[in-house]
Length: 196
Image 1 (cartoon, helix red, strand yellow):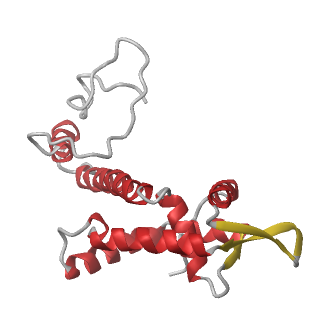
Image 2 (spheres, rainbow, N blue to C red):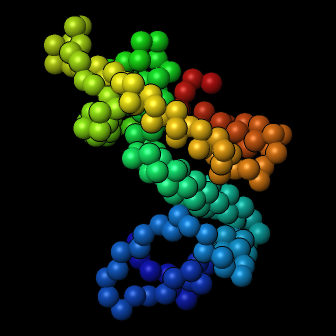
């Protein structure tokens, strides 16, 4: 991503590097003395006018920032139990299944990740003893992932910690949770995540 220049509305966020740099997402609060996304919205309007999509930009950027913050927080919670949030999600998915097992393709589909990512997640869980791979009798090349007792214990421990933390959203009341979920669900439905 090119660095912002002084003519760019987000110029206040970055400055041109003197050499190639890698910018990592910040998942911890940075405690700025102002809201950088609100400032970007103001600069956007100043640059492209009141009819521009400044509010849409600010909303989308806010969603991405909140995603960074929540994922960092969830990974930290799951990490206390030897997991990442992605591996925790796979364990929850397996625990929710009728028989505690799912095919690799079903795991990828339900987690909304590429099949290769699903396979990688399961391989790591197998290495930890949280999941076993067993042959799929309907597909000679495929396998089922089956949650183990250790996997259930780890999943329950992470779940308890996430609930104690209100999933990082304790500042919202129940009505706000329902409203936010409904709004984000509209975005997901429009993107084709599911049949609305």
